[in-house]
Image 1 (tube, rainbow, N blue to C red):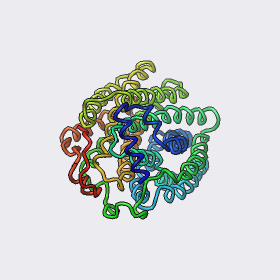
Image 2 (cartoon, rainbow, N blue to C red):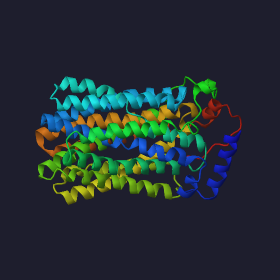
Image 3 (cartoon, rainbow, N blue to C red):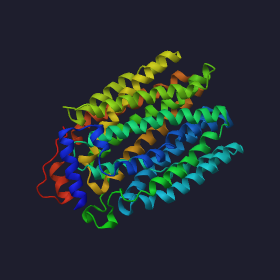
Image 4 (cartoon, one colour):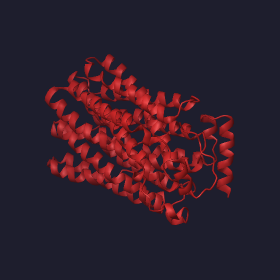
Length: 430
């Protein structure tokens, strides 16, 4: 009853003045926001840390991209299962063993790379490394969704989470690159493992704000429902695959580009500019009182992203590439935020963590494929060829979105039945 009263109070305040200030005054929010920020920071360091270490030890972007890709594919396959288990047994029950396994796996991968182990051994270590990546971002989003169920503040929360994610992607790659180039090639992964262990356990300790799970007795009819059975989630997953292709293609191609011009330390700066654009757009998206629905914003944002990504391969100077990277970043945030916002009306409450992890996993899978292909193209034809990967990924995803956009409309009646609420007024989403 207390949680219902809190939710109603939040909704009433949100209707008067939705925005970041109102969002951050949500009771209990800071108890999971600060630990969540600390726990998700290492994720932004993982892929670039692997690329830089393996490229150093094998002298091949193709090998580096392949190992990073195995990590990404493994994460994409296991992340939704982790989310499903978190929905059923609680976030802490999944997070604690996952953090311990991830720390051990990253340590093993680092040791094997430094020892000059064969590529198959690196692949073997990359599988548990990716499978055990803590899904802190989806868990934080699920906590917001539980707090703001049906509130008009949900788009603001999605924007806030995008800003938080992108801030970590501003800091993470720069930090990992500085450690790998200035301290030791393995320093980035060592720091990632240490931060995952400390931040993950800190977040797992925040039990009061974790959403109700299947074994707590809430929503027993929804306990075994899979988020992927919702057509709209499958469409969003394809869209997020395209976004992942941008992240992966940018990481490898920017690394190769800065190597080509003899300034490898600029890699973190260029990727930071790209992530900063995403962060700034995320801040703006959360501050604007949108009159259009998230489905339209997703289509428009993705169209802009595709146009911007189509120009990356033409850049042959740091200044131009930085400017284009900024524009691409500015276009990613509206697409990401709109996609995450659509999850809340599409998916029953007890499947939200799983739904968010499907989207996160789709980004990881797209990133993995892009890292592999972009690495091979950069080895064979130079950095410019690697930038064709974001273009291809976004074009295919946009075509899917445009064709299947009707599946993103929330099934209001079905959602009401699933939640067991007889006469709830639906929230307008489009």
